[in-house]
Length: 319
Image (tube, one colour):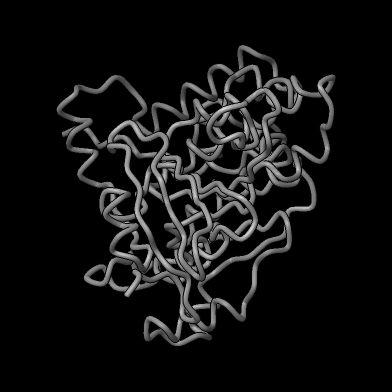
């Protein structure tokens, strides 16, 4: 009986990759088979200096190793059964989201300052650590902080609110401050390697557009900004798909001077975010600690809205 073909475990196991080629890939941030598989040959060739024909063979080998191929609709249905959900802490909000925040999906929360975006991100970073019978995944979280909004004190309060040990909860949240848009994208590149080694099921980017908006102001820089933002969102979508993790991003709103009727505000990022895969949720302030959440785009969920509250111990339902 023929010996079963050994499955590649890292990039040095892929055919056609010698020590020097492997080093070029690693230096450029392509440290895992997954990172190579989701890149284009042109991208790899341009960044590493590897000839395009060689890059094409490397990418093809990586995709074959991960079984990226045509699948039947039934196979897709079977894969969808692997999607898992994280509770937000509010039954109302969970119901609006179809049971909670899904893995293999980007969920965007956008709204004005104080609408609850960062509060939800903190709560999810705690709740992902809960047992499955309580709406968690018994896993860790990564928190990419672009605006300095992360507060360990809030994590401590929320951990106590769900009966978890605050120190253990904080040990299971990997926080990093992104200093600019290119650093933000480089961090996500590194996650393709980190998620392979750690039991991480939630990646938060709070906020996704802040650096891009600050670094590329004016209409003359719009095309470059949108191109980079589009690439970043595709990075995150591939990360969610390959590792079956929930990706949660936050976004701000801006005024539209051309709107005279209805809501004059819209999410920053324009059409790039509209076409990104996943679920988009608009958050609005209400009276006191109440917040209104509305589904504005989701391929598998009906439009609707609900009310939740922000308490001392986190996201809850109104009494």
